[in-house]
Image 1 (cartoon, rainbow, N blue to C red):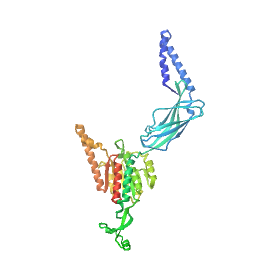
Image 2 (tube, rainbow, N blue to C red):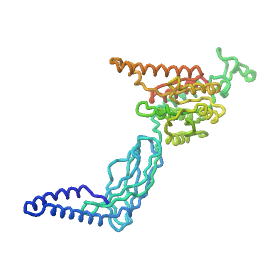
Image 3 (tube, rainbow, N blue to C red):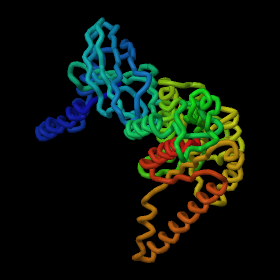
Image 4 (tube, one colour):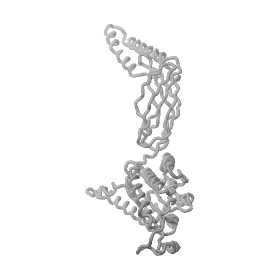
Length: 435
């Protein structure tokens, strides 16, 4: 049972007859009690004549997946199996981060009929967003009171990463086609594929001369090469405690996912094999052995429920996962947030195991606001804050230098700029024949 504001208003209106009858010599308490009793009887009549919400059955139609920040419509089909008309309000109890509207939705379902209710969602967080019940509240003909019930009905939608960095993909694909068509055929060395024969010109590497073709053609012929199109790219995303730090409007882990998605899409277009693992002390998600158009859907689906863990990452275990994914990685991209030398000792100590067998790129999300804070030195508080920021920047530079000494490339930038910068580094390695 529930009561509405009309009942409270009706009880309040009773002040008028109580005052008038009191002036006429009637006992005020008796008058007030009689008015309250009348209101209670009217409310009881309303409850008795209201439709029974327990006779309402609920069926759902919910999309299996939605993208973070984009509207998705879900449907409730309400069937009245009772003998009375059901008029009232319904609320679908989605978790707050699903972005369901707060306002209740009015319903009017005659006996034996079914009505559809649309509940729009605007998800504000990745992962499984759920609703476990639907609350139905009915009203009587007077609108003073009614009945309410909670109807169990499970609904779930998996909210995927937004992949906002996909806007950078067309320009990088155009550059990749440029490499495939022009600059990639003059590469020599182990791990490349034979492309074609052409005549030797001054300045060419004599080690690429094909002597058998030269004997047949009567002129010096040179072999040209192109980079292999089936290289193995391994992306390791750190889900440990440093990934929980917030930069801008999101966590560092979200920015790392954006970088991984852009690089994966580009590498897939280049014909390379992509392996992705999200790890801290255990594997949180892993995608491997998937090529072609199915790669990106598999990645966003695997990444969606992963959240940062407030534990230190086991880097020996993490790089063991890299070795388990493929025996011959060509490029290993580590997306982490190691910006303090003391905390990064385990990470730096394990880098050498990777850089000896593959190209290594370490991507870190930074906050450009730090440089603005370092420049503000008017008050004493700002001076102390600037000193702390300078120390942070110096520590981050020290970690980046250690990564480069270990044979890797250190790339640090904002959440918006890190994904295209890592994609550009991939293209540079392709153009130079090192990948």
